[in-house]
Image (cartoon, rainbow, N blue to C red; front, side, top):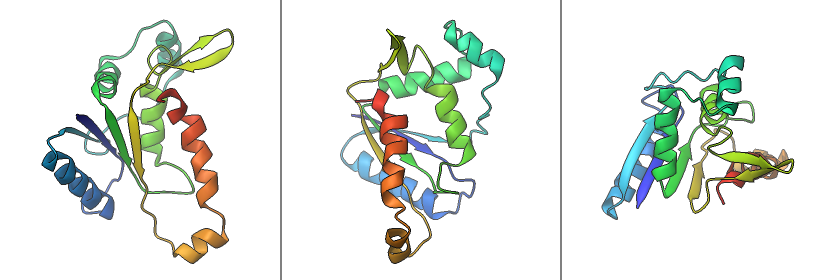
Amino acid sequence: MKHLIISAHPNPQSFNRALVEEVIKATRQVGAETVVRDLYTLDFNPVLSWSELNATMEGIVPAEIKFEQKLIAEAELITFIYPLWWMGFPAILKGYLDRVLSYGFAYQNENGVSVGLLGNKRCNILLPWEMVLKNINNLALIKPCNPVWLMGCLIFVE
């Protein structure tokens, strides 16, 4: 099995990074080939420019994005590990998704409907946050997170 881990936390000493290390250890113990993409260590540029967006629609993709797409295409399991900041992804991960899950790679339009192109993959999301469970439940924070991933991103995977 090929396992791609995408991590997005700026502090290499963070709990997020400790989770990454534990996931690496666990997947290697079962013989999985593991690739880690730490977006901050990579100094990934999250900005999707207008010219890049237009070029992508024509099938012209920057080399660094093609490389990330190759890793996703080869992976059978993708694990995202990132903190919840302001009820969303860190900006670097949002930009990664914007740039890498592009038209022609992750989806295409057929008769005005977006159709996913990344079938037969499994995805995990490890989302640590600093909040007491009671507060999470009281604020009803769990359920609103699900549609963001399930309908916004992972719909193109399954």
